[in-house]
Image 1 (cartoon, rainbow, N blue to C red):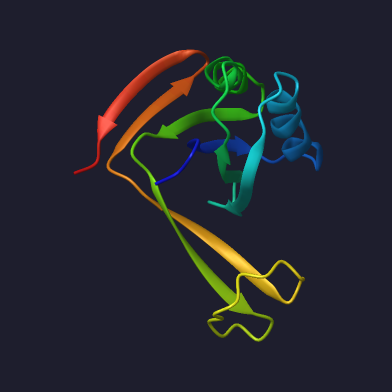
Image 2: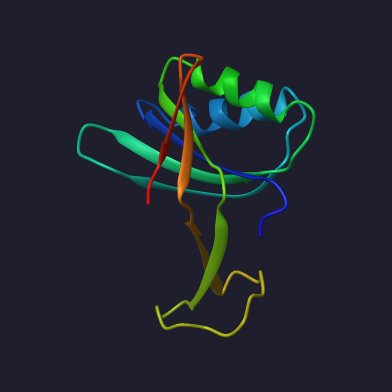
Length: 129
């Protein structure tokens, strides 16, 4: 079980400042990020950013502010997420080590069944089961 909220942000990567603006919106309200990973979803420049946020009194407000940013399409909270980590060494083989020495990459995969999403401050919810 996670100690914070697992959040998925969909946004358009128009310039290298996209990730900086996402992190800046969180840090402005003193919300810490445990881990973050991003991937390209399609050729139109849509990216998915997954992260785990520490639970603070400002976390909900930071998520709402994030959903109102210009390049952000929507923000989703993965409500009941359990995070599974997979480690790989520098040759791509599975690794038993979770060290952070630069020779091992750790991929976090959330498993969830309920999503609460926000787009421009409007919320929606859906069960995935």
